[in-house]
Length: 438
Ligand code: IMP
Image 1 (tube, helix red, strand yellow):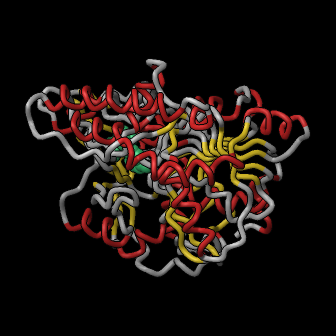
Image 2: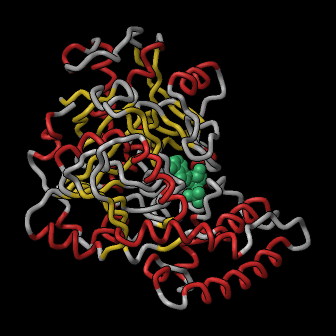
């Protein structure tokens, strides 16, 4: 652990923490650590499709919407306008944390964040099972549907819940959505959606709870920035799932990269002092889409078991594979990562040898650098591996980089050299304390 998060803030007052791969790399853990020195932590994109695990002296927490800065009572956590929020879920998640008696900081919710409603989940699941649509393997949280309603300018925002005619608008929209769902089901069984009255009853408590937290968060962030406060952005997912930079259509519907940070903070790209790209020591992916280094053998199973690679939101088993340099170098570049936090190194403790994919063979061509993340090309790519010796010893208690086994340091150096980005932190376990600052 860095004392008061100081190792993050020595040379920066605006930091974006994102993920250079497909998400699930431990942004929650790194954000919780960095938040010890932050004045404001802003969740920048996505919604409850994210699942951020935090383990600190208060216990273990699985957060989906609440920013991971919440455990610093001196930090203001903000859910930005580019995040999509299910108010009922937010209320429950927040109440669950406070019910554990943890002293937490304030949490503000942007008045402009769009609301995830039950019909978004129903539509998401219907599209995923419909034969006419590409199956993306979504988390089923309605994310693509709510962002598309936002783009069509028909969504509800947080502020709309407090308009006098909200219930009337809600019921009109509910009826229209029920008809849309019938049409999407196209004769097959229509999934259950609670009645308008049931949803409004549940929304009642959530609305009351949320009201004092609704805020013009752009103003809060803008003023804090002008006052020189420390601002941390926490992305959801990873840039290989970015709507524009990822392998479309096997992507999420928001921007885990810098665009999401800008949309949720109102800051300009030149205001970002540092981007930390959280990078796992091997690859994982959930959902559909090509994954060049995917393993279906004993090693893949070992990575899955040792890394506890099961989705926090859906419980789905994550696909696993060896570290992929071309994909991660692309992710580090499009995320603008100035430095990397390499996580889950300890998961590799058990391997006698470790492979790293340094390039792809596509037909007769060898490729080591990607400038776009084209799933058609990636689905034809075969990995070219470089093999390194493992260290076969327990690293979970090591707090000083020099004390890591030589082979582990060689592995970190190899990845750093191949990516061309400094690895400033190495994580060897889930607890906040298990982060080595180099
Ligand atoms: P959606 O975001 O639920 O629409 O899902 C789109 C794609 O992003 C699917 O492949 C999901 O598995 C993936 N995805 C969404 N959220 C996460 C996450 O937090 N971690 C990893 N993958 C995610």
